[in-house]
Image (tube, rainbow, N blue to C red):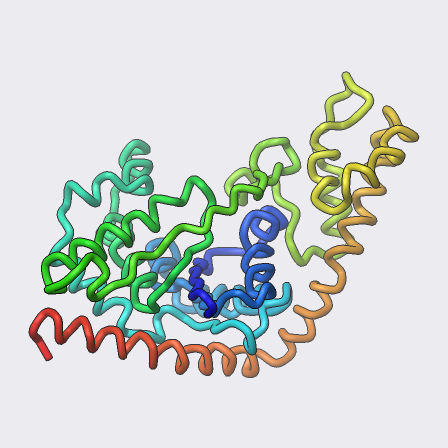
Length: 320
């Protein structure tokens, strides 16, 4: 039998190649193995901690759906939906709130990071591990694909499930909720940005995933190079994402010290890789109603599953 796989993505900005190779590609690859029933939700309620403008939220949510459809997410193989379309997510989060303690949530990496930076922390940021647990547990999820640094997300879901089962389950540790497992994508490398640091919008060192030819040229020609060696480290590190080391070896040996030539070759390879996805995305964007219909259909399918699980939970706590 297929395992249930779930992942959520916040609609908080334009995707770049670091997002693609670091996470997005893996989800599509897992979908295509045929081993999983895949659920991918657009985590707009989580994004509300950051995006608090009506039109921007609508725009970013549509763009994220376009991104995933353009890279190969197949609505026939995966259920794509908006978190906000399924009220069971927030309802279950409140039920979990009644059994989760403040000291426990204070251990969350995001909370500790925000606290260390002296930020004024809203309740949504503090409480996001509880909503995330609800996201995961509603769908009888078996696996959640995460990087090694995100394993805590799944650990919170498991802990909350165990506590709920102990208090309300009248049975074993999986009496109401199945315990999900992290699917660690340990083969995923940190994608370097144009300045050598991790590619991140906050560093302004990204190459957009659906960049035009001109945007690719501008980003690649701006890659920081080290004039002390024959091989420009940052250029090569990004180039390895698009071609094997065996393919790159003769190119870099022939062009030792010729950084401009190597950057031009990188531009060609990135453009060749991005162009089909860029064209698919442009075609999809011509009919936003069709994309929204896909989200609506996915939401209908997800809601049936989530509501059925919430009914079991309500019976367990004595309100139904």
